[in-house]
Length: 236
Image (cartoon, rainbow, N blue to C red; front, side, top):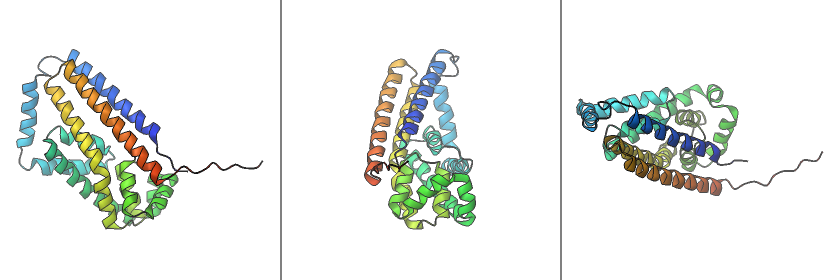
């Protein structure tokens, strides 16, 4: 039986919110004034954005991060701290697509044996079952927190998913989550530049609503695609 791994999703979401709350409290209450000076922080961002070919360099580090198994949501958030929402979307989406294609071919060259050793047999069997759905398979694997971004790419290559469906599924599956992460990060950046409790609670409310909406949407899509199978009874 396939099920939406909702417990993992809610645990991750709760951990992120707790860490953000503790981080802001420490930042607001304990950091010296020169650390949280909004003008100083904005100047740092401006200097980074003003570097020649800054989007190319950041995109390159994004791709390198996926090879190092850094969570893709963390990479997207890091990009969103530097650029505008539209710029962040362009850099993150472009780097994600390039990284996906490279890792897809790495998985295709390695084959099923080495990739299964990385992903585990259970996840690999899930990929085999999803492969019959083409583009929908990749879209589902991107939307659901069932495996690391890098592992999904390797599995798709090892199972020889159609390249066109793989790329389209990556685009469609990642775009909603990417937009949500960029939006929340942009609001968090605004909070850092205006470090007070009203801005924090406004940010927290927006983040909770987005997490709930994404979680409910993912669960509905998963259950429509994989209806719950009746439990099998065994005779003793």
